[in-house]
Image (tube, rainbow, N blue to C red):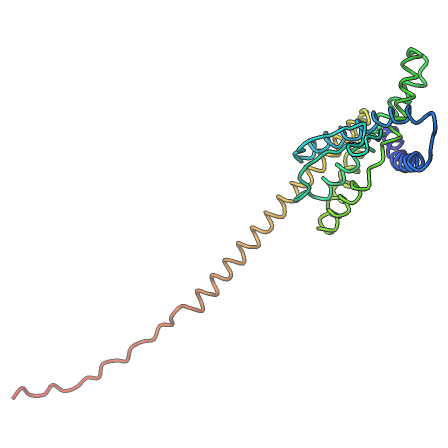
Length: 254
């Protein structure tokens, strides 16, 4: 379980490191290493875009297509890039954030997995070297692009209250799952912990929705009955006794 904290701590570290490495490589001439870096970046872009695509499927967003290209279409210069197209309207802040941060989430997990292979003596030296290069590949493209940041920032501005509510449910789910695992002394792999947090989030979300609907139905029923009684009382005609018939002497018929 301690590995979960390590991943959560290293998640922002890898994000910031990837961002600055990308900035340095784009603004400086690396000379003879350019072809090697472009090859590594192409693999990193593939991981980046596939992460977006898989996360779209996991959060219920239908992707329209995926592109991974090595050269620029206009200048024909080697510049690895890619994109995942999907309908960006009507999705929540949490969906947008998970899609935008998917490359960092996946790259963080793959980075530690590859790093473990790199420093494990039992693996073949060639596999360890390839795992080390793969770590560098992940660092080159782990950070979200500028369009990814703009997308989930725009989603937050659409509904700040609901976005904060979603963040609250995620934190509450994480604490709840952690407490359950600690209480029952259950040891699981770190990846399954995050899956359980997602399941806990769904359970909490629909539980609160059910409670809200139940309370609203009771409140609406009481209000309707009260209003009906008042309306009936207001519109009911009061009984007014008729005046008694005055007795008169019958007149003669002649």
